[in-house]
Length: 357
Ligand SMILES: *Cc1c(COP(=O)(O)O)cnc(C)c1O
Ligand code: SF4
Image 1: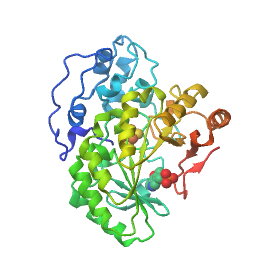
Image 2: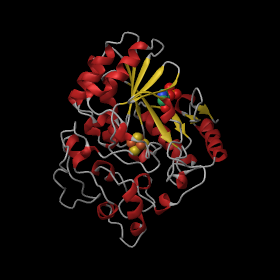
Image 3: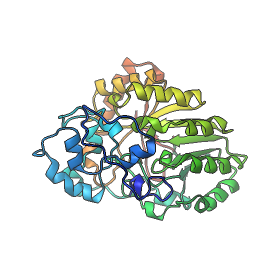
Image 4: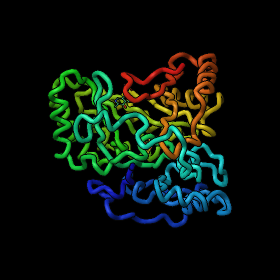
């Protein structure tokens, strides 16, 4: 299961939940703090989330507690302040709210929906596709997305310290067909910059590696994570860098996120976005069109729109494929081709993410 950052030994905030904000609300958010502190003081319970958003405790809160016990709530204040106070229907809140439905078993939904376990090549290294390999560079995230396909992943068995990645690095060095390394997790940017810079330095020594891709939600969640230290190692790497963000709704992309994207671009990174098609969150033409337009405003190319992976606990988010295809048809009519994402589904054992439209 995805961990919360404060549990990681390598993070500076390890073991200490950090100073708690003095009862701020979404309407009066706390000021900007260093990103490590933003993680340390993130919200960790449905009750706290209700208080922050001034939601009446008579709502679905009681039943949520059970779901939160299995997969804890974790959401930074920086994200909460983009939610509308008092609104259960908020598209950002719904991504992090532990709904009672999560505990209902559903046929066809399992703990490893996309065959990750069968794709392990070394501890922390997954390879499914030609020329690309994925490093589970972190076992933590800066938010717990309730629909996450890795919400049941056995992260406790993954490498933590840099030296534990040695077998993965050796495997990458031995396989000359791999051109691109993807840092994923968890969220790789939960790691300190010193760790990331050392890892990337070791990858750079493997000559046949040329491209580095970073899959992260942090620039959207906690924009100050894109700090001078991060930009420094990004600028200095010999790799061609792509940063794949993960935003599902235009409301996530405020002016500060836009400025943050600019910083990454100035450091030389190509910016892409992947979204998941989610019931009640972005399953309408206006929501998807606004997301794509806002991404282009931020100079981020909408790369993928994923069909939900059938992980247990996420069934209530699923949108039927036929509805997804109808939405794509409308998007194509309304947007330039470069602003239309590829609607794809990951299938265990397939050689690429299968296009659905
Ligand atoms: C999704 C994924 C990739 C990336 O696929 P692209 O189609 O190149 O974006 C690579 N490796 C693994 C294991 C993946 O799950
Ligand atoms: S979707 Fe990404 S950021 Fe969200 S919990 Fe899963 S791995 Fe973490």
